[in-house]
Each structure stands twice: as structure tokens, then as C-alpha cells.
Image (tube, rainbow, N blue to C red):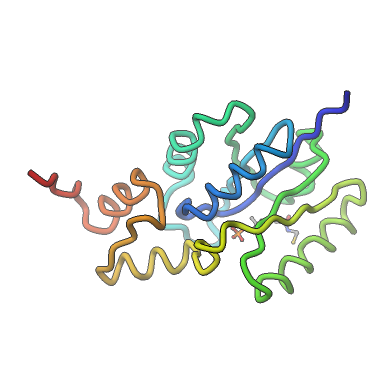
Length: 168
Ligand code: PNS
């Protein structure tokens, strides 16, 4: 039987519940799913590569066929190195489609044997992005329910420089 391995690439700065939703869906249809964190600092990430790896490892531990890795350079080189067949990407709304189509077709030009598979996250996460999570958190709003608890805690430490006070 052919085993299908897929790569789910992204910045994950930080991981949101929308990403986790997609990881869960991907883990159900692929035999193996590698979450690949883009490590280059082009986007000036809030969290370091090591911090993003740690948050993803801790929150995906329950999925036996999901592993976490980092990559730099071309995504298709990473896909080939891992002998994966597919790239998994999430599409939230039609506005994502144009850029995702461009990326998928560029990746197909570079590596015709690699397929891009799009999945939709749960509707309740369709407006969610790492960029907005960072923005609203920095401006003092709660991100409860939008990111895993661990990520919420790490955001607090990163932005406020200390751990959140425990409720008595
Ligand atoms: O979470 P993001 O920021 O939407 O993820 C974008 C990502 C990491 C998937 C994309 O920037 C990427 O694949 N970068 C690697 C460089 C590359 O392969 N470029 C050519 C294909 S467009």
C-alpha cells in the first residue's frame, strides 16, 4: 500500500486554532503530516524558530502521524527531501485563493510531481490569522479561544515580559 506523506508549511507566528484545525483534518487524510515552519526571518517574526517549534510540538503531541520540522529556502526542495507527495494549505475565504493559487502553480512549475491540496478550516476560524491575533493581543484584547492556551501564555510573556497572574 502506498503511504501518502504531506507537508503543511507556514510561518506559524504564532500557531492559531485555525492552524490546529487544519492539522487535525490533514492528519486524518494523510498517512504522515509534517508541519514545516519557515525559519528565515524575512517576515521579522515575533516568536523565534525554537519557540514556534516548541509550541507546535506541545500542541500536536496527540497526533501520532504528525511531526514538526523547520525549513529554509524553497518549499519544494524540502518536499522532495522528505519524499512527500503533497503540500497542504488552508483556504479561509476567497481572498486567500489568489495568492494560494499563485504559490501552488509556482510550486507545480518547480516540482510538477508535487500536488497542492487545499482544505477549509472550520467556519468559526475563517476570519482568524496570526497577524490579527498579534495585533489584537498587543492592543489589549483577549485571544482566548483563538489560539491554544499555551500560545496565549507565550504571547503574554513575549508582549508583557512576564507570566500572566494566576486567578485565585
Ligand atoms: O504562513 P504563511 O506565511 O502563509 O506561509 C507561507 C509559506 C511559508 C508557505 C511560503 O512563504 C513558502 O513556501 N516559502 C518558501 C519559499 C518558496 O518556496 N517560494 C516559492 C513558492 S511561492
